[in-house]
Amino acid sequence: MSYNGQRDHEQYLGFPYKTYEEILEEKHRRARRRRRSFFTVLLLISAAGVLLMWSPLQSRWFRAGGETNPIRKEQTQSPASSQKSQDAQDFSMAISEPQESSDSKIVVSDVSGIVEKVAKSVVGIVTETYSNFSQSYSGSGIILSGDGYIVTNNHVVEGGGSFTVVLYDNSNYPAYLIGSDSRTDIAVLKVEGNRFQPAEFGDSDKVKVGEAAVVIGCPGGVSLQGSTTMGIISGINRNLSINGNMMSLIQTDAAINPGNSGGPLINQYGQVVGVTSVKISAEDYEGIGFAIPINVAKPIVEQLISNGYVAGRPLVGLAVRNVSQMAASFYSLPQGLLVDSVESSSNAQSAGIVAGDIIVTINNERIYGLNDALSIRNQYKAGDKMTLGVYRGRKVYDVEVQLIEQANLSDNYNF
Image (cartoon, rainbow, N blue to C red; front, side, top):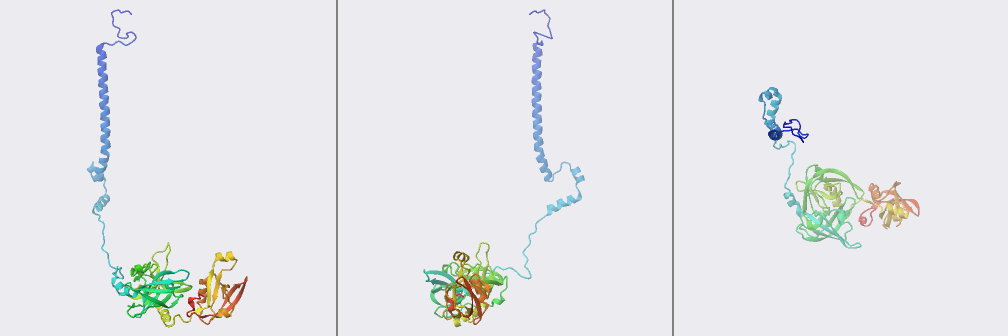
């Protein structure tokens, strides 16, 4: 390397030549540029944060009614929007007092007076049957007279060997069956004594839909005797079939449960207007119960007490059971009524009907079970004649029979 004493400001060993002062000054300039850049970035970040904070504040300000430019807002706001804003501030939801209708009114009543009046006239009935094995089941009943006549449902006492009546005070008495009528599901029992409290009975023809209804009885058994439910009369003249007989019933939504059968349906005056009998009990139904109108039950009760049966009721004089579709298919038999026994005093026996015969038609009308047969038979009266189609030995024979009076034979013969 040679040095000629002159400074080469352009190149020194291939690199630009700078003095120490020049190098130091350049370092200072770079440091100043970095500081300016840092503060610029910091300022930009700060400004962005302020803008982000200001936007929601500004929105809340406007929603609260604030204004950044009152003059502009005043110029652009229409009279209609100003009135709407004023209306919104003055809005108040009105709550009205209930107004009583001039036509009718809904009243939730205290029925304790009705219960006090009728409760002593409602009894529990325990029925025991000795066929096969001893069984007992419960129902309800209504005292008819001070000397111990009691009305209930036929299905409460049907098949019973002994009966016990339980009063409101849990005292109990043995009872005996005066008579029963499966066609109307009415039965009458009798207990000895003369200190019983009879119910007051009302005119069921005057019952109106919508009026109050009370039910008293023994739902689930005599341990719940005196249980009371309340509702309304839901319908009248409801035509339902009971044991093959169409009956006009009163409908109510007062709860009727197993054990209430035979108990009273009571009006708002404490009068019994019906005998509770049928309840629709299925998954899709709720609050639908039925009662036999007292005006329908009255003549049946009077005949049962006078005769032990309802006079004039027709009977063929047969004990029968249904041949089901499955049994018919299995044994290669027709569906119909299989005869188990024949009443010796009936015209059916003299006409030649015997046990083992199957009744398949009545007056040339095909029947498949007892309900079909009863619906036809009940259109006749004792003394009338019918033609039965009897299946025997793979052939069907027409047999004419004269109907007899049911009298007390209905306990053993169901057709």
